[in-house]
Amino acid sequence: MRCTTSQAVRSLTHLAQVKYSRHSCITTVAISQYHHTSALNANPVLRSPRSCYTSESIHARATNKDKDSIASITQNHPTKPNDNINSTNATNTDYTDSMVKYLTQEEAKSVDEHLMGDKYAFSIDQLMELAGLSVACAVAEQYPPALLNDKRVLILCGPGNNGGDGLVAARHLKLFGYSVDVYYPKQKDVKLYKSLTTQCVNMEVDIHTDLPQLDGDKYGLLIDAMFGFSFHGEPREPFKTAIARMNECDIDTCSVDLPSGWDVEKGPPTDGLKPAMLVSLTAPKLCAKTFTGHHYLGGRFVPPELERVLGLNLPSYATSQMFVKL
Ligand SMILES: NC(=O)C1=CN([C@@H]2O[C@H](COP(=O)(O)OP(=O)(O)OC[C@H]3O[C@@H](n4cnc5c(N)ncnc54)[C@H](OP(=O)(O)O)[C@@H]3O)[C@@H](O)[C@H]2O)[C@@H](O)CC1
Ligand SMILES: [K+]
Image 1 (cartoon, protein in one colour):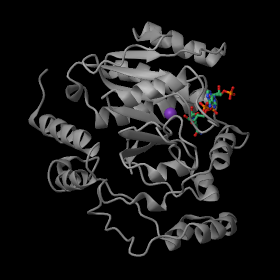
Image 2: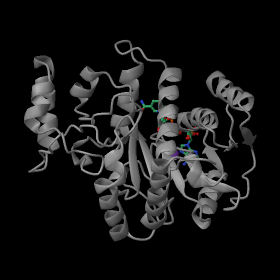
Image 3: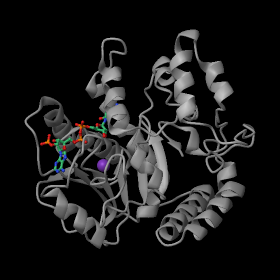
């Protein structure tokens, strides 16, 4: 495969970062610094101004109607001192995500309900399409095709909307040039999921109902779209075994919205999934506070008033990007 010098530099940087982040935080910081000072400074996406809101600027962005609810939110989520990043110098590595709101399980469900209620009037199909597209775009950023050396991507899809996001991501990744397989063992008789599955088949994505062997020579990346913010209890079969196999193999995992099997608020159980990358959707969930890998935010569809009222304090996305790195 031919690639430009800048693509090659970026791929090598990604490779080093992905490989070493699994073993050493110190190495990740060092490579992150390299990112900041060299290769990524040339990347217009990563040079884009990044908002960093103080409580004053949150109030400045609020309408009068919003201010009471925001006052209580900022009391509960104090901003860090010294958080005034010079926007002309700010890059992804400068951006501190400590101000973005991390949601409880109930808050995540409530955002969903607001978006699909009468006022904001989104349909689930629309949100899922944007969510899945943002996952595909973030994956293409962190694991460009050249990095995978022609290995395939396996997307593990659960029975709910998290699985639906995975099916959408599968279709877009195929369009981006990846070879994609989907593991979808619990297919519900729901029109939306059936349509997404048909679209995948027509896009020549292979759908499996039995878990393929997680062979590192065949697969370069696993995408975990098994459970999202409605997960509760202990993973049941066949997902329990899938999580165990994923932890046994040496293939990087990217989780969609939150790592499957993690408590939405408390984080990983013993022997929980250990993804190298996470794409939180809409706003990160509380469990993501303990996540130390490559953390992206996607699901760029929140109307400004809803963001203000819920105090989400989302970071700025670059002009046409579907994701932002936290
Ligand atoms: N606005 C947004 O942010 C948007 C969010 N979106 C996405 O939606 C996701 C939330 O989707 P969701 O509500 O459908 O639930 P999800 O987490 O996929 O799982 C439910 C399924 O899992 C099952 N299940 C549960 N526990 C289990 C267990 N222990 N072991 C086994 N099974 C278990 C449960 O079965 P049940 O318990 O009901 O029998 C049910 O079938 C969210 O995280 C994001 O990815 C976007 O698509 C659109 C915009
Ligand atoms: K997931």
